[in-house]
Length: 310
Image (tube, rainbow, N blue to C red; front, side, top):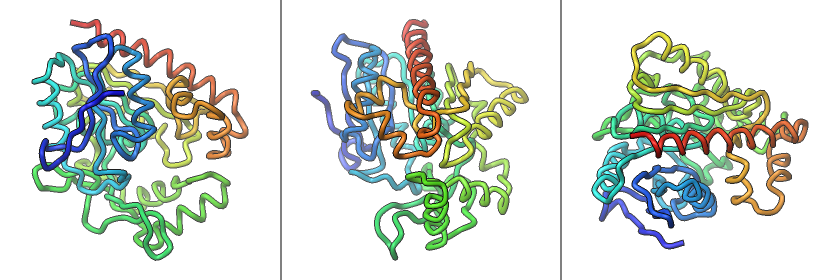
């Protein structure tokens, strides 16, 4: 797939631009995968281009899944480039940590008129790194937020477990539940220890256009269903201009991707991988697959409506 590559030093952001083969004046900034050109990113590109939109994939750095003081002005710069290169409409899509990033960016930059957030949180949390450190695969970064803007960290909820207890908590819960990763206790305990302050919540009432929130009750990483309901309540109580659509399922795990996108990511054994990753998918494979099928149908509709709207 032909694409343009962007580096922070030259362009102000790290990413890749993939033009839709049929031509389009709509683009979705997509943050799925550890790198803008890895397998997950390319799978999302193929699926979204099939929906008739251009795609700009982004990530913090080359094969880097850590998020700590990620400069949101990179998204701002990317939006400017998209507008200058024939894109009339700008959307943003993310999953997991980048679902939270998608919400935060959309709340800051009014040019974004479509926001797709899969398994997001409704608040900003402490930044983290991944790799190898003292036998740990992930650790929080002291004094840093997930995101920053103009050199200042955004207010964030600190984790109640710091290094190395942070990873020990995740590892123990993952072993206890049989999940590939289970960090739900980490988030629940942290919110109990540090009730989220008003400035740490994402001001979703500032989001423009269409807002699509997707999650499942059986998410093993954090209680995204609770977070989505809090966002619904926030929007019910505050003036806003966005049109919210929520999709909260009983079964679906943390992998609430459209079924077609997941099959592109994993052409053989996509269902088996999800069952291997999460016990909830092993217990309810048909229900999880039906969730992904429904997500695909509804997400395709939302994209078509957004493209067609004046």
